[in-house]
Length: 111
View (cartoon, rainbow, N blue to C red):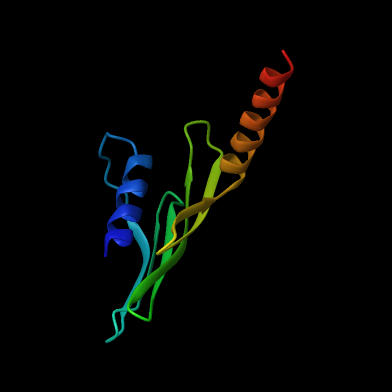
């Protein structure tokens, strides 16, 4: 349950502070008796989120994807996995930033 709360908290940090009402054009949800679940929604502005939670041996494994348009109008898409080992996001902007930080570290070492 903590992993689910953590994912929700992380995703909420990405949304703008100003509240604007945007219609939902698609919404699906399913809950299984063992606690596994699936949900997805898409907003009229193109924002999208899909998530699957699977209970395995009393642990919850969660995977999903979300997408939104950033301030410059570029599509940002992040996929993620969360389990007993932690939360692992993947996305072009995340990987590009990690590569940039590694390059900066190398430059700092050689100075």
